[in-house]
Image (tube, rainbow, N blue to C red; front, side, top):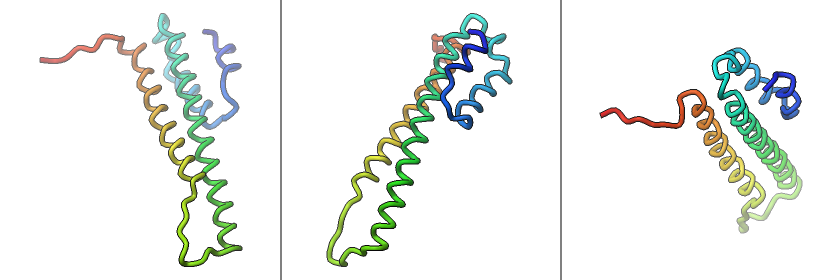
Length: 122
């Protein structure tokens, strides 16, 4: 895949996508993985997608947490009530799921490098 086409497919987060893409370029992935270039960057794209989703849920969590804090600061609850912040629970679950999914996609980056076959040492 030519570099100019890969740049068009990047997400708009320069921290996540720029770092991953620049590391792949720095490693000369297109020369090292000539026949597996498309597979490698397909998985790279998936990693960028999952990391972007992880960051999205982290930002949502921070935003909701701040809103809850401000709400409780202005309207303190009575001491005899307990409550759960379900939105925070949902966001942290989504965040953790995206971390796991990111690691799954990251592991797939190894396939073009080491191959599909797994050999055990006896």
